[in-house]
Length: 183
Image (cartoon, rainbow, N blue to C red; front, side, top):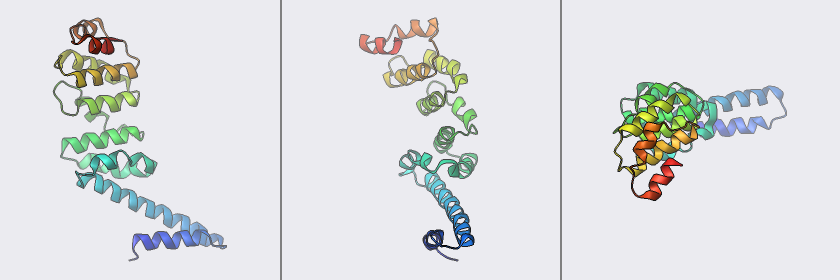
């Protein structure tokens, strides 16, 4: 079987052919190569912990080609971090397959709490607003990073903070942090 790089080169050469049938076959071959490449990228995302975050940041460049391979990664992931990161990538690309996993991570103490809330709020998933408020009420008041993540996710969803959340955040010190969370 021909190497992928040779298949791509030959198809690109045929794309410039004067023969219509050759150009159409070239497009079909390039599409097949693209699917193979997308599957290899998904496999690298799943298996290469060191590069996972860097691959994650670039998955959207492949567009809809990544949906099927990333849905497969999501479905078979045993590692919660891989499952949630793939769910986040899928949501960014328009697939809601992983939303239940992201929603389940919205709870105080979950190591993926911020990734889940940021992903859901960036996608405009308004159903996340109440669980985000619940996490704000239950998280450690001294954890500035988590408080900011949750408050900014609510703002991104255009969800007004409840009085209970405002009262809780009014106890945050220092004042500049409290002010940034409340306004």
